[in-house]
Length: 272
Image 1 (spheres, helix red, strand yellow):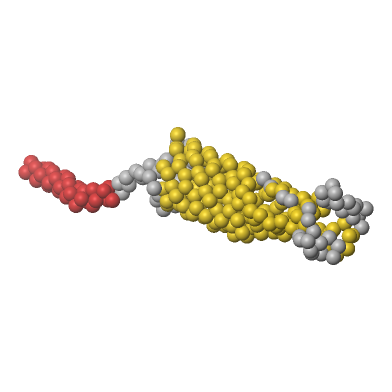
Image 2: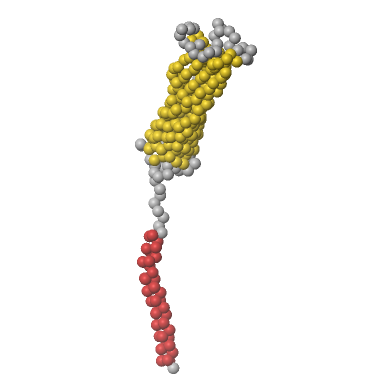
């Protein structure tokens, strides 16, 4: 009987050893797989910190709309002619280039300065009937005014808010300068040469305000832009002289302040 009990005890011990060995063997088999899985699922390295600090150069294109009030008055020596008024409006394509620099002074805010030059062809014409002082028509003839805004340049400050690491809405404002060509005619009864006209070019200063958003979808260097700008430029005045053989001043045309609105898309490269 003792011999049988020892045999059973030995058998039980052997079975325990077998279970332990089986567990160790299984662990040895799956350990490399677990290690490989842990290696694959390791967190990726942190992204490079995006910075808006630096200078950039780019180009843009879009649409623009302008409006301007115009008027003409007769000199005192010409009697029985009423003043005339009108409104010039135009629309067209606008586009050009820009260059600027930004400084990100904390994680959420960016300040910068930018200059741009845009070419356009905002040409509009207005006409009015030539009236006597009592409001009755003089007869054939009339007033005409034309303004063609050819280019606009600005120098602006910018203040941006970092909405996401690579997305920055901003507000902007500063000085603006426009180049325009003007024509005007005042035709009396019977028309020219019984008329007075003028044609000239002039540069006008003013202001610009607007807002936009810069987005860097591909890298820290390429920046896409959507921007709205509103310009207010000073007007111009002139003297329209009679055509020969008549002499003297026929009218004094005035072009009021011109308002321009533009929406553009742009692409720039941050050079450093």
